[in-house]
Image 1 (tube, one colour):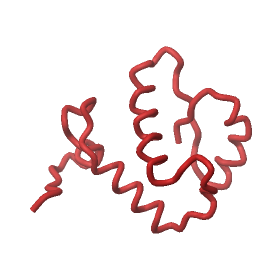
Image 2 (cartoon, rainbow, N blue to C red; image 1 turned 180 degrees about the vertical axis):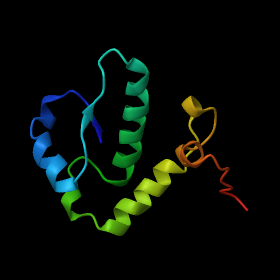
Image 3 (cartoon, one colour; image 1 turned 60 degrees about the vertical axis):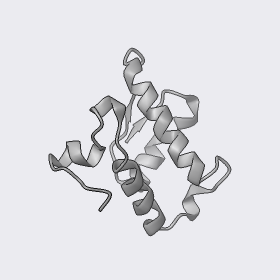
Image 4 (cartoon, helix red, strand yellow; image 1 turned 90 degrees about the horizontal axis):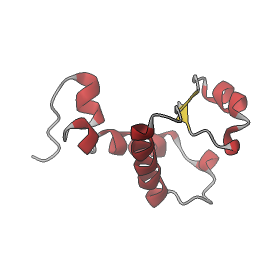
Amino acid sequence: MTLDNGGEFAMRSIVSEASNADIYFAKPYASYQRGTNENTNEIIRRQWPKKKALVSLTEDEIRDMEFMINSMPRKVLGGLTPLEVYTGKSVALIA
């Protein structure tokens, strides 16, 4: 998991332990990462507003959001989706 450098992540060790995931912080000088992070947050917040208790989400809701994010073409990836870059395979989303 990659997080911002904000104070809201001071309790990151609890999140890391609960999610069984390593946590990394975005490098302040890597400004190109900032746009992708902010765009992804905006996509998530369209579905789940900031005041939504994320703990109330089901595994299916989280998986659906993960699929939606990973199947969206990205300019930074040359029009490919993160799924296509990760797997090296083209994904046809429209039949």
